[in-house]
Image 1 (cartoon, helix red, strand yellow):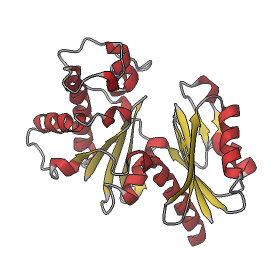
Image 2 (cartoon, rainbow, N blue to C red):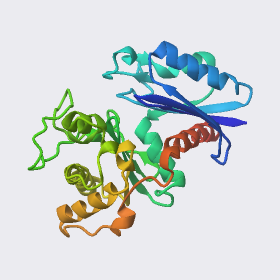
Image 3 (cartoon, one colour):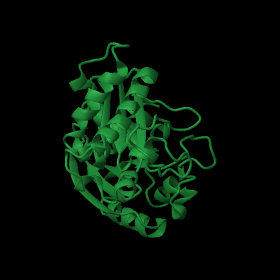
Image 4 (cartoon, helix red, strand yellow):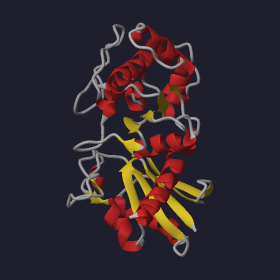
Length: 293
C-alpha cells in the first residue's frame, strides 16, 4: 500500500510514492513542458504502482479551481503558461487512476508538509511562502487551508518600493507587486544575473530582504500566524533569512508581541521535501476522510 504525491510546479513536476508514515519510497522529477508530454510521464510513473496505489495528493501551480461543485473543479485555469490554460488535471488522472485525489495549490502542499512534519508541527496556524520562479503563499488555521471564493494569491500583495530600487517589476498584472519585485526572474531581469551568482555582501540583498520582510509584516498583521516559513530557491541564500528577520523587527517596531524571531520567521525544516511530504499527507487524509464518511 502506497500513497502518491505530485508537486506540479511551473518549472518541474516532482512525483513520489510513500508509505503511511510519510516516508518517501521513490521520487522522480521532470521538466514542465506541455500537458501531453508531462502528464504522460506522471501516468507512466504511477502506473508502476497501480496495484498498491491508494490515493494521490496533488499540489499544482495555478490559478486552479478548488471548488468541488464547480464544473471546472480540478482544472488549472488562467495560468500564464498557455499550454496549461483550462487543463483538466484531476480528470486526466482519474481516467487512469480510479483513486481518491486531493487537489490544492503547490504552495498549500508545501505548507501542509511543514504543518504535519516540519516547523509547523504542533502549531495551529502556519503560513508558508515559496520565493522562487514566482511567489506564492499558503495558510493553515486549525488544520484547514484558508480559502474563500478561491485560494489565496498572497505573492501578489502590494509592497512599498525600496528607495534605492528603480526596477519597474515583472508581473504582467501588477508590475511592482511582491512577485514582480522579489521573485527569481525579477532579480535576474533587474541585475542581469541570477541571485545565486550574487555574493552575500551585495547591496541588492538588503533590497530583497526589505520586500520579503514587508511580506512578513503584512502577513503578521492580517493573520497573526504562529510561524511564517519562507521556502523556494531565492531563500536558499543562507544569509537572507537573518536579513529578513532584522528588517522585519524594524518594520513591526514593537507594535505586536510575536514569538521569538528565530522561531517566527524561518526557512523550511523539511527543505525540498516539504511539498512531497505534504502531498503524501493530503493523499492519506483524503482516504481517512472518505472512510469516516
